[in-house]
Length: 540
Image (cartoon, rainbow, N blue to C red; front, side, top):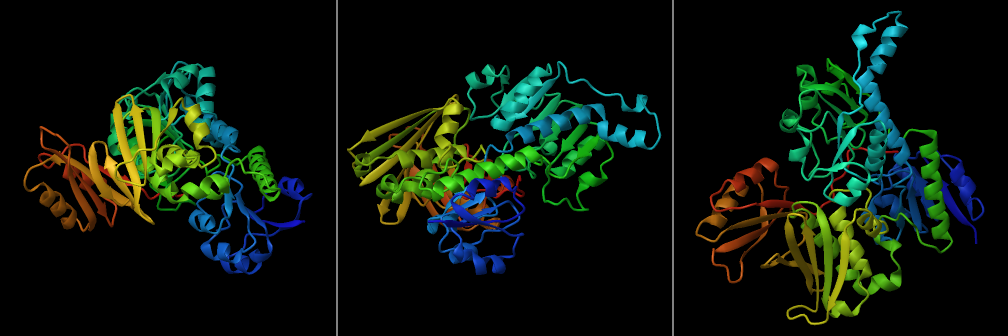
């Protein structure tokens, strides 16, 4: 049987060469939604970059589709939920641009320190301004790296080879792994800011990293710091960075990604008067990277059409049906438990214990373990999927423990996740209280029954009159609607310790959360988002 594969968005011809023995290949330019929906029904596979939007309408029309491949890292242009409902596997190429992105980071760093773009422009104008472009050596300087994934690791190795002293902050990288690279482990960003002569970011844009570099954090950095961002736009407050460069507090910056792309004329960085290098999202723009991602995704499409598994699937259909079916009702709940617990822990993760109880313990729960790991790791690491989550956990030195117990007092099936960090332990349990009704039933020692929805507010507090009213008043005054609330007292508590767990219809802004924390008797309130943050741009 010969399959039909559609390739759009000017993907390298090497993809077709890999697929031609098993499929008829059609190359087309990027098509609008309506045009693509008209023809997609005759294809078994679709391969795109970032230009083609794979919408629910296209997936609905693609009744023969078995796989959609994204020749790049991000999959923001593909509706993953709809693809999963249709049983369509979605794959990407998380490692294809690693070398290109790392090399561009180093190139930006060196160009920034030696004023290369400015010196080039001056010399081409017939000037000879050697004294004006006196640079700074990187040798023996301190480089801070936020995020130690594959790109961050490669940058660290290169920087060390240049004689830099490298300091890494990544809650999902073990101290042993960091020290094996020859770098120093920094436990928190508060410790990292004042250390660095240079700072480079290699983290995804999430709720935790959005505008991470802002006026406050910039002011806590060393005077004369130099900053590189080739990761994601929206991690840096661009106005705050512009002001810091113009004031001299930031000596230089090199930026490849922006909060909104293509960059608009209103972007404050365009008018910045200072040592600033801007490039148009070139991190993955090398011939080799484009070939690598094309080869990677084409091979996965070939394998899936041949009845094999995909190595970088980002959705549930990648899991074997015979393992998935018995535990499928618990998959989303397990991922949500992982995502929730990742947002209430402090410190670097050392181990994760996953316990299945009751009837659930009778099944092979390996798919649930994968879902939990994906939920936990996705909050801080980009490109985590159902295939690579266990690999990433192992590479970060995180111990993962499976446990089973057939006894379960209150539920037919219960899954409990316990995360141990260098600063403490957190535990969350979930169950199906009826068909299609998942609930978070325990947070640490507190019994709850709360829906794992997009927005959850967790408020530990002293159990005394008026506490619920004070929190509700703050939320209501700021037009945040409460859809569900539960108050639970810690068993056998001598200090009247209680917890409010609140579902809201809207996100709880940082300033609102800070206001809640100022209420007398409230300790360590947390806002948890179970809705994935969409990146503002793609890396081709």
